[in-house]
Image (cartoon, rainbow over all chains, first blue to last red; front, side, top):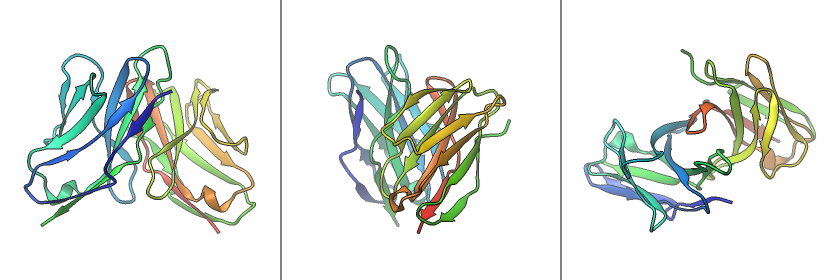
Length: 115
Length: 111
């Protein structure tokens, strides 16, 4: 079985400051990793994903995440946040092969950007 | 190309009633999954359908059931509603295992 741990339930940060949202996973097989964002009263939007290849993946709005197999982590970072980044962020894992392709989600991290 | 749509957006029911939630998959997507997201929690997998057959189920009782239709739209049915069923219900569709597209959700309140 696979699982995801998001260590921080809430991360407050000031505008233009850097931020890191932590995600650790457990799985006995190779994985796909995802970060989704959820704005208030909306569904989930895919922010970025790691499937294979380069361990550093980037989104179009400045977020990036690095797959670290030895530490079983996929932390999300942004060098300078905006007020509009305030949202709930979910890390998810699925099996790349030999198991379930159905994503398992963490409990989420609420990013709160203060002016 | 339209995205994943869900209806209704909000719903209020009382304990013991039955509810049907609907999802229209993204065009061409043959796989649909349903998730329950309780307040302050991450989405929990309910079940998945692939070409009209259920091919995966999470830890939910049999009163949660579903259907997928030939046009790949789907339904989630919940019988004998309980207060704890109050949640946001999300539908996601996929054509490939690495890409899931979520709908906006249906907010169900059970009184």
